[in-house]
Length: 213
Ligand code: SF4
Image (cartoon, rainbow, N blue to C red; front, side, top):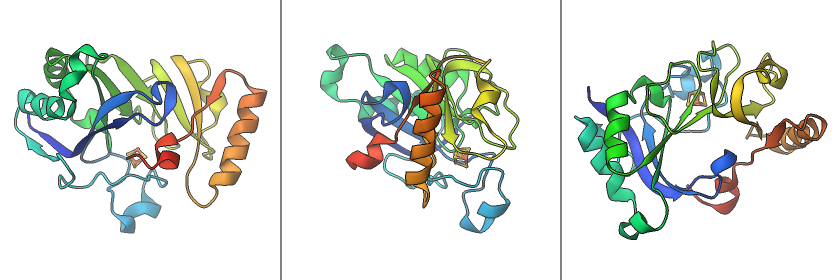
């Protein structure tokens, strides 16, 4: 199969347990919970998305015909001196990356020396070979992926409460304040929840505060 990718770029991971770690971000085109068109937002399953995942027109984006082509485009973004300076990491994101990312693409990325992480809404099964699975559940979307490295819940979401996820098999549980006009209030609420429920840790979108992509 081929892979439709919005953009590929090198930055620091801003969120969750890997915050601050250098990584190549590979943003796949498309999501199953929203078309990405503003005119559809209110009728979408997921209404608070802050990401442009439509098309293949971003830096480094395009259609890659084979897993090897995709892996080569990702490897091109990792700095040349990196091979001896820490394990390369690629964060496969979207949109919903698991609509496209498959086991052969993961293998091709690993053959290039990458640890492969995914940031998913959890509605799709995960292919074999992933090194890091970050699931961000959404209200009104059936959760299929119930185990992984970190569960990162955007907070608050009506009908999607932290208590619903506490029994699942994740190594880390994060609350991330929902961005938008109520960010300050949402941040206070998330802090308060973490203080009262220490299973949960606060995740802030540090890349936004730091001016990173
Ligand atoms: S599931 Fe993720 S990528 Fe899809 S619309 Fe929601 S926030 Fe955006």
